[in-house]
Length: 150
Image 1 (tube, rainbow, N blue to C red):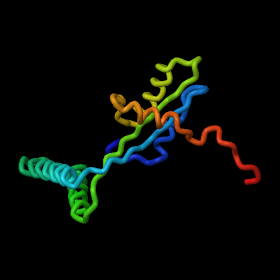
Image 2 (image 1 turned 45 degrees about the vertical axis):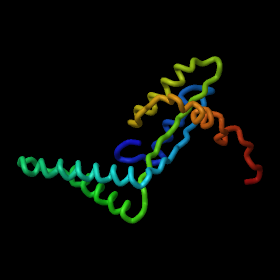
Image 3 (image 1 turned 90 degrees about the vertical axis):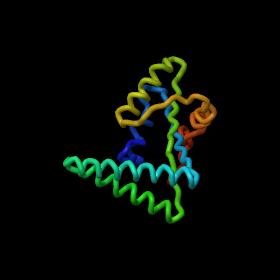
Image 4 (image 1 turned 180 degrees about the vertical axis):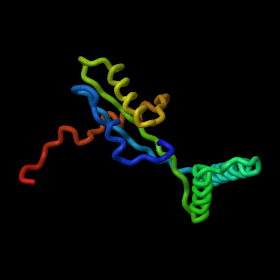
């Protein structure tokens, strides 16, 4: 996800079909870190943020708001870990299906363009095709009958 975070509404353009008959799906995967990995990652990030701002101060450079914010965030992460919580990594799998009359490359290019406009980092699904297949074929309430009277 982007550095500033992602709101659910920002996923809308990624899921909006780019052509007639195209379908898009998205599955989000939350992977918790184990305690040791989470602690190591937080300590590394905290050390880097501290050294970076200290080095700037010693050399006479101004420490900007972004550096101060990073130090606060890393300190907050360490407090959360000390309280017994853990870190999670969020990954999304986006799938596009197109009708036979349309080129799959065109559908993929439209999906990639939508993702890049939102500054999502794209990666290939090497050795993870089953996850892509499942997220692509599960119904996403498309074509579900509407209840009458409500």
